[in-house]
View 1 (cartoon, one colour):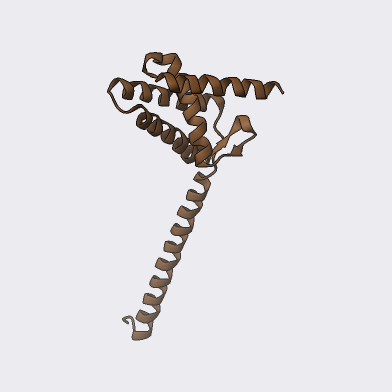
View 2 (view 1 turned 90 degrees about the vertical axis):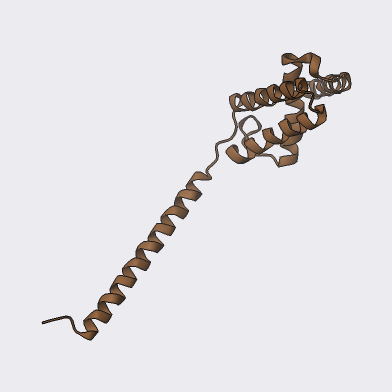
Length: 146
């Protein structure tokens, strides 16, 4: 005896139900995996050192290639900030896992990259930038002593 009309209809309904159920299950599973991947770990001092050195290296190479210093520094600082936001959610371990916004990370990156570049390629740093860095460094040291 063959499959009658109602059996075919039930079979199609069950097939459709299984397909929808498995599809939803897959979507939910993928969504959970994406959320799990967003559990960021705050940037350690080792991470910051690496990003700072990479920025300083880029700045030195850009300066030697006669790229405008401010443009090179801007790109290096923006990259520094973007990496910390993308990989660490903007959090820095040394600051108690505090999350910093892009502007604060950019400014901190600029300061740190210039400091590292002064050690790597001091001849590539304009005198005004060097003087501003040294002045700001003295201010920070003075503030920490308080």
